[in-house]
Image (cartoon, rainbow over all chains, first blue to last red; front, side, top):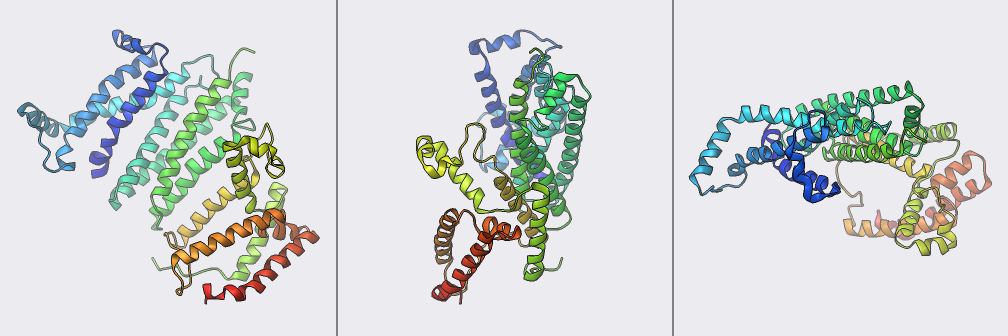
Length: 259
Length: 172
């Protein structure tokens, strides 16, 4: 599992910084971003997200720094303090990993919970969105690692986990739509965006079929011994995950309670 | 696992299956199959994106443009996406999923690609003049006993037969 533990983690700091930059650009008063860090509000998903990002971004850099010597032969930290810190990191990997798993779970779920806290948007305002975003994020993450990995055994394990996650994701999506269908008329209207409305084609074709079911079929084929270039299911899952987020954010803004 | 990469279906069997697919398509979607239509929609969408003025002035492009529907939101486009996905699955099942260029051993890959490109370009142009290609006009047309479908079918295969002599060096 070298790619999972070592090489793929090199993507994380970059991805986090990119995400943070996007969050900053989204702020109305960019220079006041630091005010998020003057308070801790348990009831605010944004506060959870901001603090989690505050911890996980440097942690992800520290995690990667410990493997720099392996990826760049002859890397020299130059200072004794840094050399000692590296030694400490490599001796306490497990502790670090546990801390990061907890933060990663919060990070993956908070975007969905943040959207579901918008009680004026019926599409977002459902408790499934958090777990759904988490599972979709985990599945796209695994797709990326699978794409990077050259080890057959590792890819097989990841493929199995990914299939499980795709199954859970399909279940959560079904569950979400069924929840809408059993809800008040504003939620029925939200669901109708995907059941005949303007997002029907993009959602069912690009997210459900090409982003989940088809790559799952390819992964099953690969697990049963057929040769499938891993780039194809991986890319489909990544595109499907991205389209899913775009659609949810776009569609959510159309739905409302007041007419 | 045994090597199945060289085993193909019997063409007559394949033909019958294609006919059944066409029948199923009529039953499920209420219209026939097509292939060149998706390429056309792609071209129309691209021209509309980069030169909307030209696209709306042109008699040809403007026919496929409307204000409330994107030119790519078309059944044939999705059919072709599905075709790619299905072909990929079939290739994986037959163990034939690798990058290669099929060509006669007597010609180079470049020559094959060049002539395939020229042929494809001419066929695409011809199919738009004839309002359909082998699938859209000949197959789907003949399936509903349209005279145009039969004429297109004979014209495509007849001219292919006639011209094959001049381009035989590309294959044998």
